[in-house]
Length: 378
Image (cartoon, rainbow, N blue to C red; front, top):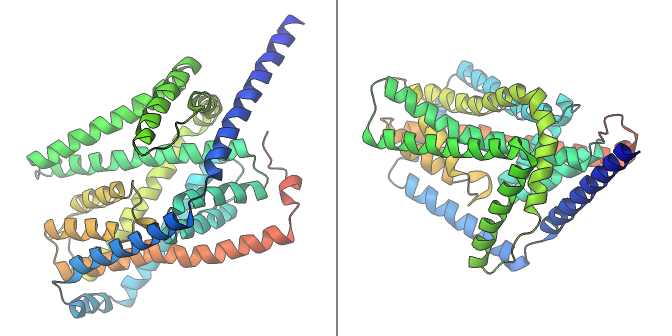
């Protein structure tokens, strides 16, 4: 009887903690930007994108860029189509690994729809996360399962963004192209990756360590928010403990598939860029594949702070500047980057709009699916 009472008490405490954390999360997601802030974000994004493209394209002939694009053969275009389609599919693989029970078809619909929002709307990442909750809920997945999927996929994505630049710089060094700047960048990347892994490992070590990480992170966040006169955060220690408790089981059984799917997704995106460069005439002798990987990796890091929707303008600036500095002919590099962004930024928007409309139609015609599906987790 005593053991049952203790178990019941622990269960009630866990439910209370989860409710508190969910309430805190609800308050955070409930905050909406004012119309003035939204207008400012839209204007800022458009001005920034226009300025970036003006400075990137002002000293080259657009006719040369178009000639490089139209010179691609039908075979090269077909190869690009296959690589681009594969890249879209890899978005789904990550979500299938972090959300057991999610089918490939539904994962594709969700990832493409949310990507379309992220690529077109200022602060679209937050809206995309909200859409993720709505879609998974409509298919019978609980809020707690969705939260863990969002957090784990985000953490693994961050790990990949930190690890790939280190890998690329190491490969360049092995080819004999090491420099002081590249070595310094590699060391900084290794330091950031180690710090991220250590913090994550400490969170998983015990509930007490997870609570400490949450408290320290909350204090740091509150101090940063105070600089812009925002209210301090609350409940982070509860959230980190809950994250730790819910994550352990998922990672214990699925950390390898999650890691593999994340790397495949990132490297497939890189493959699209590499094929675009080769098809427009930028040979491996001009910019070798390891240098392309390094520039690609730093372009991914540049999108960590979403100045523009989907990194529009920012990604192009990093890629064109980096690849040209590595030895690529600028008109050909610009042509390759524009084709690459059309396939990895523009194409997901078109596919995503269709997926979003299809899901909306299905959710309206089958509103009871969330309560009837057998996939609903506890």
